[in-house]
Length: 257
Ligand SMILES: [Zn+2]
Ligand SMILES: [Zn+2]
Image 1 (cartoon, protein in one colour):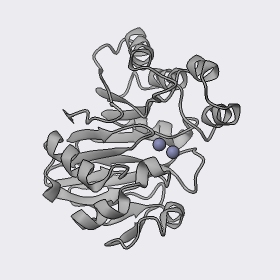
Image 2 (cartoon, rainbow, N blue to C red):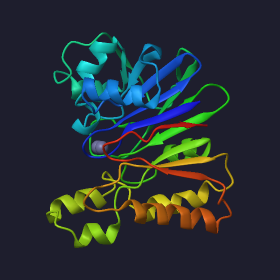
Image 3 (tube, rainbow, N blue to C red):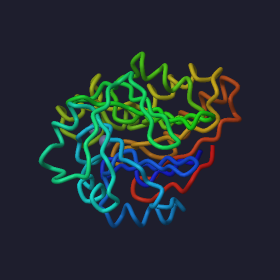
Image 4 (tube, rainbow, N blue to C red):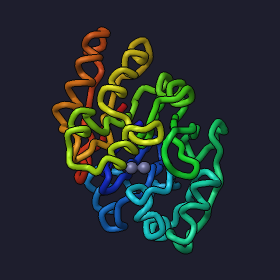
């Protein structure tokens, strides 16, 4: 399996997951042009794209949804709540498919399990994707790591996990207090500390690749996020896990799992 983070963070999110002859986009927060360019840079053949999985309706995840879906003629897969919340903003789309947390479905060579996450929007989900051999789980935009998130990331060979902010930087930073409170709440975003703590539980699992994602530009640094993740994994004897950091604006490049 291959994964390419095309962009990650508050100015746009899109991830491509590929295996065999099937590729999927997870979120479409980049323009059609930037999506095409990032796919080309990552070596993902746009002709293999078979659908767009949407996690939730925040604009950093759906701002390119309509144009990207129309251009590549892709069906959109998301929960009923997210379809309803996006409705109108995406315009005419080739096909809308409703998916439910806990119900696995297939697209081409890939099987997808959506799982519920805690975030301040209609019906947000993360996605676990497998080709039958390898599994990737994507969990960004969540205030806490709930049971279903924990179960899905524990099964994954590649975990894409939100390392949004350093708590002290957020508290000391310039954001207005209501926004700080929202980010730190159960329906906000994961801090480096909370995400890193979660890694301890993954120590005995199959995870061989970890991608730190959705970093805040204002309230985090790549160094701090990396230090928190590396520190925990080294402590629990998992120095072997490869850690990548998803940049805000550039593609990470393709990671083979
Ligand atoms: Zn987001
Ligand atoms: Zn969000």
